[in-house]
View 1 (tube, rainbow, N blue to C red):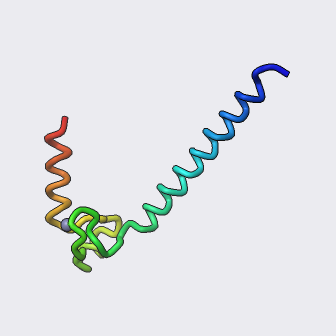
View 2 (view 1 turned 135 degrees about the horizontal axis):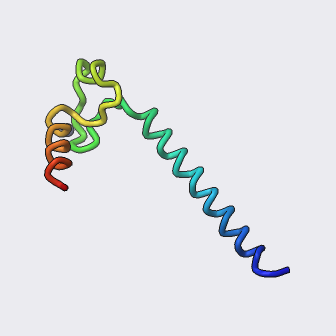
Length: 73
Ligand SMILES: [Zn+2]
């Protein structure tokens, strides 16, 4: 016995954490096209959801978000 048992435990925990992250990402993907805007909590227009099923923000918030992304370089 050397330090490997401890290392394995850390590995397992890292693996579990990775799986949890994947699950969260999958859930977020499934939730994509949700009705509520994740920024303002307002309803996302149905036309917008149909045009862009992955939208998680209303049109206004999405524009603001993208502008923020562009500026934040
Ligand atoms: Zn919004």
